[in-house]
Length: 282
Image (cartoon, rainbow, N blue to C red):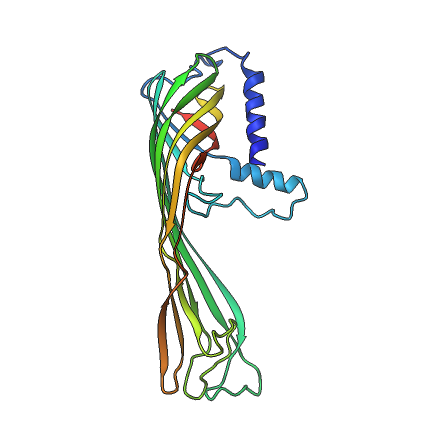
C-alpha cells in the first residue's frame, strides 16, 4: 500500500506543477525563506489505517507507533528542518517513545493447602509489558527548483535504541502445601513459572543518501516523498528470563539466558528511510 501512496503523490506532483503563483491570496510567500523552521511527520500509518477501513481488511487496528528504527513502524518520527537558504536545508529527526500495557487473566484461587474451595473463588494473573524506542538523526539536503515543486537530495545518519520487558504477577503463591498453584499461564517443565522476561537492548544504525520531491500545496505547507540508498544494521543483545518454582524445600528463583542475541546488516535501496513527508514551515 505504501508504494501505491507514493505513486499517487508523484502523480500529484506531475499534474500540479502548473500552479506557479508563488504567493498566497494574503500575500504570504509559498516557499520557505532563509531562517525558517519546519516540523513534519510521515502520514503513512494514518493512510494505512484509512485504506484498511475501506478495503474490507481484517487489519483495522489503529495506527501503529511501536517498533524499532528497523521495523515497519520505525519511520514514525518527528522531523525538523532549518532553512539555511533557498538551496540548503539542515534536517533532524527525533523519536522518544516510552510505553507500557497491562493485562489480566482470570484464574481460580487455591486454598492454602492447594485444594479447591467449596465455592470457587477467582483472582487474576497480571502481565505487564513495558518498553522504549528512541531514534535520533541528522543530515543535510540540497534543493533545486523555483516553483511549487522542489527536488532535493542529500545524506543523513540515524541511530536508534530500544528495549522491552514483560513481568508476571500471580494470584496464587507457591508454597510447600501448594508447590504447583493454579495459574493462567502454563508451567515450564510442569514445575516452574516465568516471572519476568527481559529482552536484550536493541541498537540500530543507518547511513543513507536520498533523493525526493516536495510539493507546496499552500503557503508554508508541503507533502513529499523520498527514497534512498543506504547501509543499515541492527543488533539485539541477549535477554534474561526469571522463573520461580518449588525445589522441594523452598521457592527457588532461577535466572537464565534468553531470548538470544540477534543481528542484521544490509546495503540496499532504503534500508533505513524512504517515506512520505508532510511538512509545515514557520
